[in-house]
Length: 211
Image (spheres, rainbow, N blue to C red):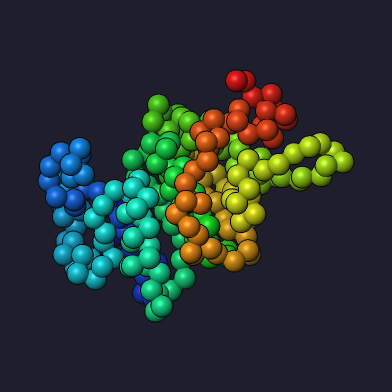
């Protein structure tokens, strides 16, 4: 995937990839990877490492994301963050956490692409619990004369312009509100209702979400 993105975007684009398989070989309990280095099969593997465009680590680890963002991507001479593609573990918790970390940091008009939103056990909660909430926020009115209401995800709702979905993939577009590159890590953690739509009053009141 990374090779395709690198070739697709213009030569002026700066493309970064976070890859778990190039961690040192060993047990996952030790923060390592036991199933082989898939990234090393790329003919430009060492070049991408030397350029600091390939970052070996677990993208589900917020501290790892935060470190790469601050030290490798948020440089004074770096271009603005315009597109993020999440094509990782396909686990609901990982996809959702990726959303809450990256979306506020994307520049106005930019895109977040989430792949593999299919009806499988690993991704079901993202598809059935997160998606209804973010769709509700997209159409949020907040008119107290009509109904007491509030966004499911207040921070994301303020930044969201549109959602475009095809089979198993959705693209989330940023509006023109400024990016929040220095959002504290404590505010980048997904809230408790992320994968439980019944905890969002808007969903419960409008759609009768079951407890």
